[in-house]
Length: 174
Image (cartoon, rainbow, N blue to C red):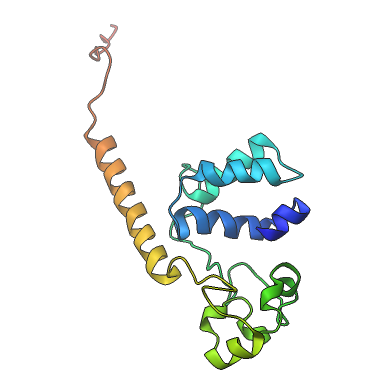
């Protein structure tokens, strides 16, 4: 988000990560909140494309990717975001308060040993925020919410009675 505010641009996979984190992945915030920020801050903002992308990535459009495919917002281990930044240069550029951390902890400083945090001058909750949710727990809960909503929608659509005039069978012509 710092890159977005500073440069007015984000790589498409960073856009995916932001939208997934904000909506179906972690925070379960309505997709229009993120759409509005991107509409305001992206130099290449296009209203139609922005809406289309946010609807899809939030998992609320009929053509959305499967709701259970959730990005891990931190580049730890194998990342579905294909982040290849072993030295943490991206973090150094946009999150300079983490620049002195060992590279392997720059994308998830809350997993860093306390001794390394102290050496780097990082105090979680003070100089850098603690995670606002536990990704594993929250994404699992949100996936379950989507499953329940999908089940409810399916049940509602299968129990609806046909509306309109009664069907009249055509008479067979002789």
